[in-house]
Length: 471
Image (cartoon, rainbow, N blue to C red; front, side):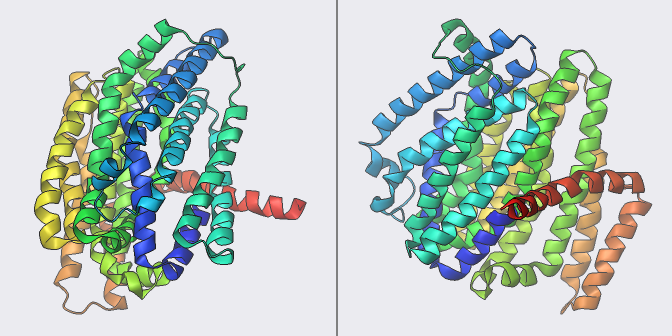
């Protein structure tokens, strides 16, 4: 994550916004193909592998899913390539035709990555997952410097770096899966995977739409420059979301097993503690962004991207509610209701789509950020309702309290005509004091947050130091 952010800092200062925006649109197009052809295999495979200890059964599940995914990827690529101009038109005239050739390659790499990543989750091999992310970040950073800055390949250099690093990571992931690799295929197992995963497939498509409809709409209406501004605004929220993925990789198999073994109270306690800590940590990040957003953007990405600041603040608030909703959603899947997230995401998609179409023409990237927030707010009650129907107690005030405290202090800050550094420091202190006095957080929670975040931040640096020392 650190290398990815540093690479983005350099790219933002070096590449024109037009080239950066075109690169983003190319990767979004590949993601679109990956989502429509996933069939929910990744989540269903992770769950079924985690639910059994039978090695032969695990092997058959993995090999069946892998070869089905490869076949689907080839078929979709063969269909999509002749229609590449028509598909590109969905993303606006801003997507250069010279970059479309990269889309099938990125599509194959991304689809296979998701499947292998999910398989390791099912085996609880989280260190392998962490190492793969580290390898990908470091290698992508080095290759980006090579192609973009040394070889002067500019926007296409970003794609070269992404493809090569993804290939290396796929080889590592494939070799890390502790089962015998065979060419075998079991239709009955595939049917089982697809039956559980198909509602999740619909959910994945809808998730892509509400997560990326803003980027697509901005590309159509504002071109690559608007996309570049918005991508910078969402860059830090996206990187924090990657930290959350490390948590999710552990949380989903554990809570799935708790529900499978009938330990509903234990699972509910795990869920509510997670929601409370996630809410406080992310809303604190949103407050920091509100107070110091301009300084952060200038420091990381240069003054060229100052128009991104208002959207950056809104997206940090959306991150808070989004991670809460995602935790609730995967808990719904863990309890066995794999069809419910699709219902939630229909609502999310409709709210996001309508909001984007109404707000982006008037407010541009700020409208896109607001639309993202509106879609998330609309779906939270549904997730809570589905869990409560399964007799899983969700303590809503646990995660709402930090948000309400944030809203009060954010309003105070916005009412100050010309806030200075002292104002910002006092508001920060008042926020923390209010959080402690109202029991939104306590010292034991801070200890948990520190113990969880410290390894996530220090391990990549230790591995880098060890690698340098050995070399």
